[in-house]
Image 1 (cartoon, rainbow, N blue to C red):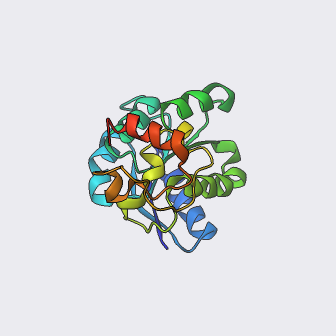
Image 2: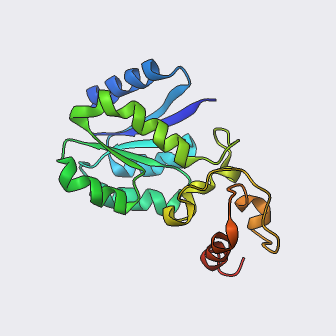
Image 3: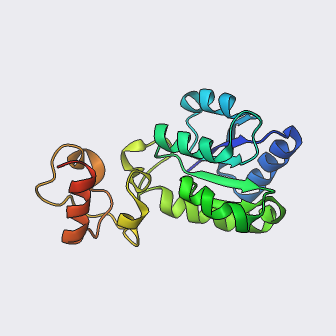
Length: 189
């Protein structure tokens, strides 16, 4: 399975090096696009259809946290992994609160990126999903609190029509509390 990346960073040399590093990490990793501004990235996401977005927080045309929120609002199924030279102690929490799936300090990128990508891949896709298959990218559509520890495929709970029947049942181990939370989240699904 190929994993498609969009890299957002103001430095072309860094984007190039990160692209090479991703290729060394896994032959299935493919950088489908690079952007040096938030505006360029946001305009290109629909055509590029990345599976994961890697972004710096320091962008010339928009605050990084706002970019994370905009991506999450428009494409909630695409995880955003943040890398930055900003102190992780100061920016990790706000980045995660804004919707980032992970935060890696640029100084530790070579050491931490492989584990961060594995963690994002585990959380970011329901079992059996393939690149570009949005019907099972459900882990990103529901709050992390609801999904904590719920990653097995299971049949749809009875009585959940509409969106649930269209694929929202792909995450299993629901239990009654999970079903009630899902119904509330989906507005009566």
